[in-house]
Amino acid sequence: MQTLIPPRSRIRLTRRGRLVLVVAGAVMAGTAVAVPLLTTADGRAGSRPAALVIPEGWRASQVYDAIDKALQLPPGSTRKSLGKAGLKLPKDAAGNPEGYLFPASYPLREGATPESLLRSMVDTAHQKFDGAPVAAGAQRNSVNVYQAVTIASIVQAEGIEKEDMGKAARVILNRLERGMPLQLDATLTYALGRATPPTTEEDTRVESPYNTYQRTGLPPTPIGNPGEDAMRAAINPTPGEWLYFVTVKPGDTRFTADYATHMRNVDEYNSLHQKGGQRSPSAAPSGGAG
Image 1 (cartoon, rainbow, N blue to C red):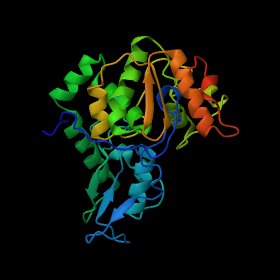
Image 2: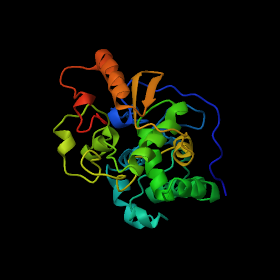
Image 3: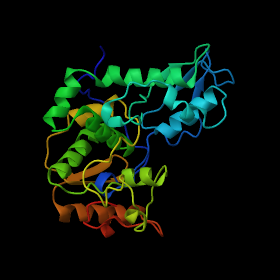
């Protein structure tokens, strides 16, 4: 059975310089793709696609829309098919496939249906996530596999460099261990049904189990479908005492355990990026998120 392999040394630059994690505006991986990625047998875009590509970080709602378009079905068809798809999801998921629609390329064979594609995605997720290395990594961090997938989905949603994913996962775990609210814009935008920030102070008061400004602990489900790099980060976080980080500009993500240092980094971010009407990270309830 295929499982996650140990981390490899690769670097992927973030698409934009945004605040990340506890100070940050989340950038959804794949949200820049407005239509499903379809390829024909010869690799060109066309009306008779041979495969559907699901990018890392897409939310379940984006996957449903992509399947509808790929199979030329009325909008909402895939979502309505969930009940009869027979998806083998973890008990904690309570029937919600978010986090388990694994990002990959799926052939659109003759007779493909929403149910068959969803099953392929969930089966692929189990091939990646089910196994001793993932279970052991989750246990080392005092979480179960489903919670590790949730952490990976948050790391993926932050849109940071691959080399910093392990540090971001460590920040989440450190804050959980200390009972600190995560204060994540990534989870807040998920609650609000938005793709990207900015968010407002009013947004942070929304009633939702995904509002990690108001609630402690992890959100109840993943907030997207993470890839292998993010999952590796979640089960093998980089050792460190960090509690905050901010991406001041692309390629310049700064992690710290010191609040004063963090706020200096936030000030530098604001001087470079803040626009009228955008909430300042320093205005967050504990200064930890933005």
